[in-house]
Image (cartoon, rainbow, N blue to C red; front, side):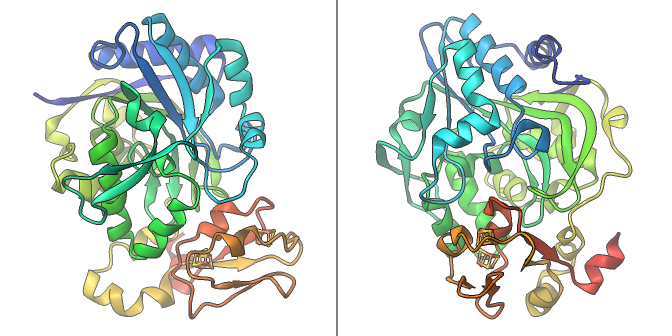
Length: 376
Ligand code: SF4
Ligand code: SF4
């Protein structure tokens, strides 16, 4: 049977329109049966990368999260909103508030759950990078998981979609360990797919009302896309999103790894599209991240020249407050805060771009290679 993915128009974040679009998108892919059962606990996992207001387009819009929560509740289940944003020692209540999820919780009654707490160890029977993972009891004991990403480019993994969103199930500093252990995007993709293999989201809902193009996932440009995507196969949903923005299915390490491990399909012939057609949904001039071109270089050549041509973080003197957050979250101790702005040791740097993603002041720019500049 084909994996169904729906693409449904949604022109803005009016809660009534978003809810109808989500309702329709889910109904086109088979409805809520098997996703939400009466009396179940359903974990709704947005992408809360950073403490940014909804209009910045960095995080899943609260209207989409609210629609998902309300529809879960209408199905007679208990909805929880849970995440663990990047970095360590951060004030999660500030994140919930700024991202607009505190308000969603207030309106719907759905509790906000830190996935940094009550950690258990689970086996990953078919893990490629990890044979065991630490996950919050909330993730392990939820009856159903709904991944609710935002359509954004990502300079390391090219897309941050339904599967990449699962990295936020890893508590706090555990995500830094993922980057330390997997400096190559292919290995990081396998590690994230290890999470997919145990978390098994039953539904993916993508906020593509406003997406992010260019050098995402934090400082790219906002782009009106005007749709919601839904599907039970997170890999198939990411595949459709990739094709919409001009990436090939196997360009994205998580999609490639998951499809190779048969945890979903990245073959458009095996995906049943409903709602809008792909031809209608494709955005011809969507701007890809600078590293997109780099990933198409044959791997043996790339291994030799990657460090010269991939984008790298560059601290900005006008914005850096020397808060040290980037230093504390750099997987390889490549940042020194004794200078202003902070200094990056590029000999140590593994180009994970965590500092760029996590800086609360957006004080890390991306320095593009000459090759990356020609790409535009
Ligand atoms: S670059 Fe950002 S995170 Fe790092 S010290 Fe400066 S302001 Fe803080
Ligand atoms: S300096 Fe930034 S990009 Fe380089 S390894 Fe550290 S966190 Fe990653």
